[in-house]
Length: 112
Image 1 (cartoon, rainbow, N blue to C red):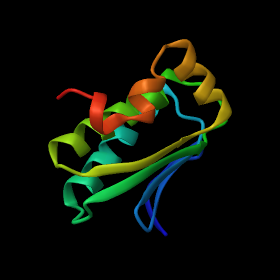
Image 2 (image 1 turned 90 degrees about the vertical axis):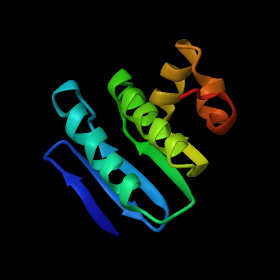
Image 3 (image 1 turned 180 degrees about the vertical axis):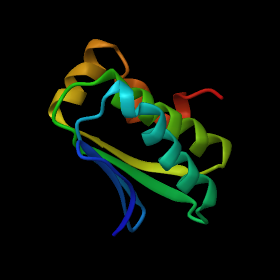
C-alpha cells in the first residue's frame, strides 16, 4: 500500500491497481484529493484501474466530483476503469443525482 494523501479526516491509498479513498471528503480538501489522484494517474503505467470509495461514510458531492475528475484523466490517458466501488451513502447520492449510468459504465458514457 502506498499513501498518496493523508489528512486527519481523509486519506488516499494505492493498493495494487486501486485508488482507495477513506474518510470524510469535504470541500476544503477537494482540490488536494483530486490532485493527488490525478498525479498518480498521470504517472502510472497501468492500463486499468479501480476506484474504491467504500470507506467514505458520508454522502458528499465533493467525493463524486473527485471521482469524475479521476475518470476524466483516465479517459484522456486511455486507462480503463474496471470497477468503481461506492459506499452506501454515495450510492444513494449518485442515484438521487441520476449519475448511476456514468458511474456504472464510465468508459462508454463519460465525454471528454
